[in-house]
Image (cartoon, rainbow, N blue to C red; front, top):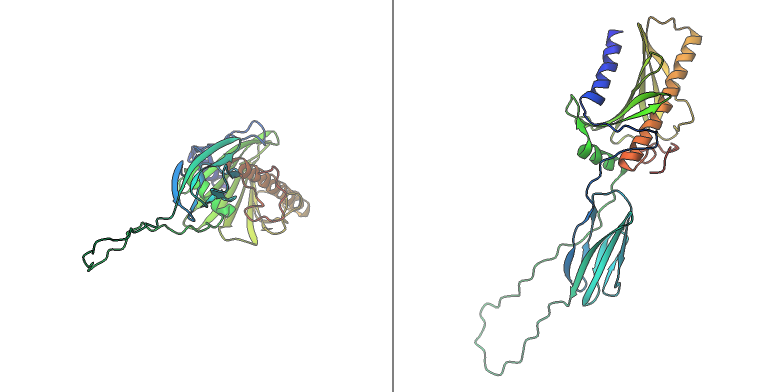
Length: 311
């Protein structure tokens, strides 16, 4: 009993006291998030005809729309890569959420100097010096980041350190008339994401946790702990990432019991509670991902999960 109560206390401290960061939601769908300054990588650039360059927008995860006012001079693709086509000047515009960011591109002709005809004999050149031109780095398409990469980077940038030195992001939300705390930690040493929910009602305390290795593709273990006065139990279930959605049960089984008469009827009641709390936890984590990181549970690998909100 003392071990289980200590476990819940440690989870609460790790999520609330040690992190120092939280998002308090008046409703489950509302979130306050931190925003970075949005900017374009270059405001002015000069290119030779035929050269390419990759423009980027930083400080946002929103969709970026690229456009050139003179495509015949400078073209731009949907990912911000520009191509200098002919001599002239063009303006490249990136539109993000109603705001515009521009880069002025000047295209010059290729450097092909004309040597005038020599009327007087010239001294023999013993060591002709080639013209020095600055090499242009080849522009290559950058592979698109996975949702797990995006989540890892978000936690690294906006999370706060817990007692173990790992970064964690938290959210506090009203759930079933009570305040629940949802947290997502990235454990660098184990290369794991750990999802945690702590809550309760009517004097009971609940804790749900689920570790997801960075490269996980199939089954995860969810663990639920229930505590009421001097009574407690723990249940575990395997969660299939390919088939689990928020409308089905995960088939929890009781793994430890203290001061509870766990007959078949009681076992059915308590495993049902564990399943209900896993569904609640998944909804909370999904809303946290959508509101903070602009991704959802399906994006990070739960292929059959029905997202609560549109990311």
